[in-house]
Length: 76
Image 1 (spheres, rainbow, N blue to C red):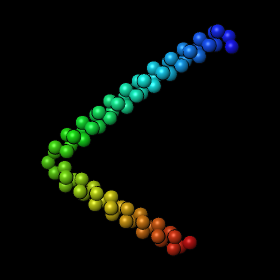
Image 2: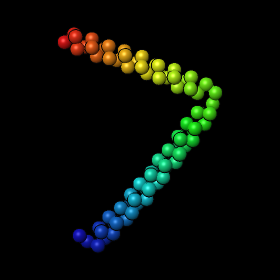
Image 3: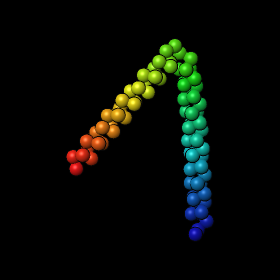
Image 4: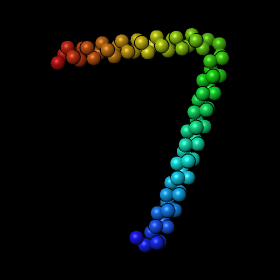
């Protein structure tokens, strides 16, 4: 390979490394923001009630999903 090509490749790898580092920093920032938001929500009144309601909704959705799968299996 020519030296020019090697230098170009080295520059591209360096640029990609910097971009990936920025992406990792952004992911870390988002993680910290998410955790902070969750901790604030936990301190709000009626938080536990809302969580319980969401759990109940998820259980109901799972029951419906299982029933529809059973119906699909029975039809075949």
